[in-house]
Length: 360
Image (cartoon, rainbow, N blue to C red; front, side):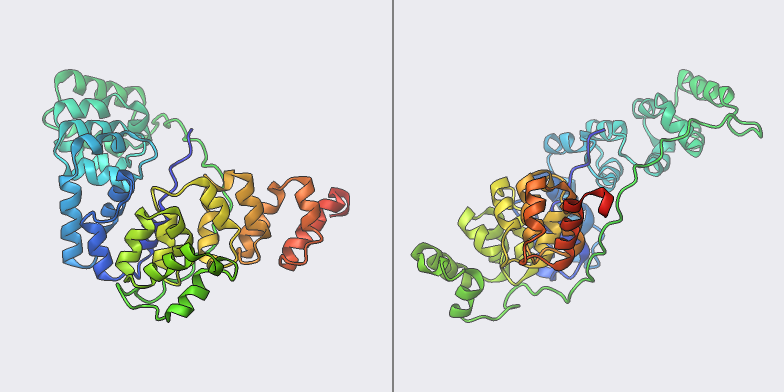
């Protein structure tokens, strides 16, 4: 089975809360230049927003999103169940409900709620999925209450009930679902910080901005200084847009922004490249939260250079660095074991591998 698509870091940041209303409203109105699947996922979260204006804007964006662009999103097995549930419940187009109902990621409880009122054609997609019906027999009961079923559909449901003696005391148990794969417990996320203001949330002089964004060597390059001077004059919303659609040089600057939403937006940019991720993972001037997000991203940590950079970066959260040590080459682990620039627990972990299993 293919791995689920990793959630866009910016979508995760919005989901965690603490984002100012102006920025949530901008996102709900579709003003963030994200990939379609990321926009749809963000809107699905924002239709639950406590602010009525944000909820209304997100609902309008989802409802008016072109069916031709929505269809491949609903067809993908990587699409989160909450997105599929919203679409199959609120979008009336037959072709959209059809692909959502055929998606194995659609939650059973959503189908059960709709089963009594599905059209005959859509109900057929549920009738033929015996695995789902046996896994959740209450869905079968709900489907049987659908007055629009034809005689053939009713017969097949009746035969399924009789064959597996569903509802009888000696019912044949349905096939057991395979046990879920065990995963390492995720590192606890930090508590949401106070609301991120839309502008003026971090006060710096221009000179402080140059020191914050650029190393001493980078400050010798006129073009980098000019880029910082331009970014310094932007408010948070403008920085957010620049982080998503700006140049590579602008992303390299904004990834160090003290506003966590702006820095996270760089990681969510559709234009971000893998070489940029490698470079960011080795930066000692980015926040530990940025390094944590990179370390938790399955696709990015498949790249060896990213793993090595994270382990060697003293700002990487310790739990992530220790997890990645075994993935390094023997040569890099040997070098790590004597590197005084990494935290002592990381160095000791590398030393255990150098000594070998007999001496661990």
